[in-house]
Amino acid sequence: MLINSCALPTSLVLNFSLFTETMPSRRELLTRASTGFGLVALTGLLGLERVRGAAAISPARRLGDPHFRPRAKHVIFCYMSGGVSHLDTFDPKPRLRELHGRPMPVPVERTQFNNNGNIFGSPFDFHPGGESGLPISDLFPHLRAHCADDLAVIRSMTSPVNEHAQGNFFFHTGFPFIGHPSAGAWTCYGLGSENDNLPGYVVLKSGEAETPHGGVGQWSSGFLPAQHQASVIKVDADEPVPNIRPRERDGVQRARLDFIRTVDRGFADRAARPDPVEAAIRNYETAYRMQSAVPELCDLRGETTETKRLYGFEAANPMTRAYGHQALLARRLVERGVRFIELTCLPQTPGGGQGPNPWDQHGGLEKGHRNMASQVDQPIAGLLVDLKRRGLLDETLVIWAGEFGRTPFSQGSDGRDHNPFGFSIWLAGGGARGGTIFGQTDELGYHVVEGKATVYDLWATVLHLIGLDHEDLTFRHSGRDFRLTDVHGNVLREVLA
Image (cartoon, rainbow, N blue to C red):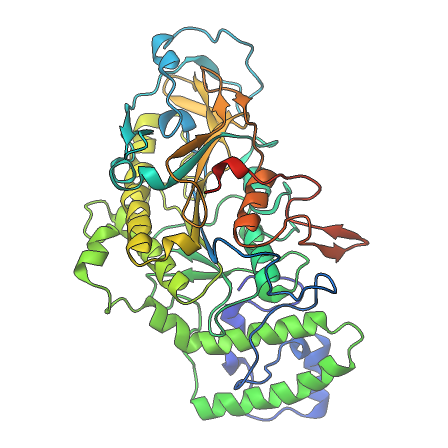
């Protein structure tokens, strides 16, 4: 779990050997409590009620209860950090090829690097997929062949920011800076967890995957109770979570935890503001249970060869295999009731750099986008196919998005700069209307001309599909009510089934 003001990271929470074999004196205990260790405790290891949140949103509703009947129970967020070019993936613009190499016929907005060239026609062909005829570029042959009729493509997404770290924060939290809860944290705050043994919000990594620019703060719980922050699981590591294996005999560990439970429960009962203490207690509870749940989750011996092949485990590209490992774990997390799961991209090639933002091709776009699409196409298509055949896609909303798009003109000779004025994302499953397109950019793919959508609209729609009214999901902090959509957002009903 991530560090914030009222929780310890999982690597520290799980390292119970920090406590010495000798029972501390009262003076030593008070010293430790004064520096923060008194806030971490364990209560009710057996027979706990499921964690459902800290307080009611309103007198009429408990946290954990949806506002209305949900279409989806789980969210999988395939985040394409770096800014995917919509012009080369899901928004074909034949006009760009006609005008390739000519100056832009309209004024050019300020870009990240202001090294702006002429019009850059896409090097990739588009073809219709499925019965819907949804056009998808050659970068995604698996998605086009097997999943076109499941995708609700939004071609009119916009962002107010044009830089990676701010874009990542904004897309995850609705604010372009650190300190606010992510969408995953809001989801778990509103609905609670369906699994006592795993966190409600999990971020998956594999291989050389790095945290996108901005750092782990984009996955934090912000000012929400700390049990709603993300836990990062590296799915192919010897220890998927640091210190997941107990370092001492269970009886010894249990004795220590019972002692901590007794002391810190008393502290929580006396505290004027017990919420941070309760949040730390819940994190300790989850961490203890994760010692058995995470190894079982990551043990793929029960998965068939055919299933692994579906996710790309036999692909020639090692990055495909690594991302496929994340995608398969995402399905297993859904089966275990985890609410919100995020997948992270790997570099273009092993040791290839640009790990935090691997879709960011300011030069060499054709090669870079081919490498990245090869990484994610088969695993994501396999995930959608696998969820569908297991009857899970109807209750699982899958989101595919990056922080912004790319310009219709070149940066230098063969790259594209950042474009927040119009780009594409898609939804699948969980109440989304597959085989549809919402919104439109101009003939150059530069600005939105129809159905302008914002990140606030996206999260309002996601919350609606999981049974939450985005205007009613609030938390009072620093004297005002906050929400994921701030004071904005409308449900995009055109993409609902």
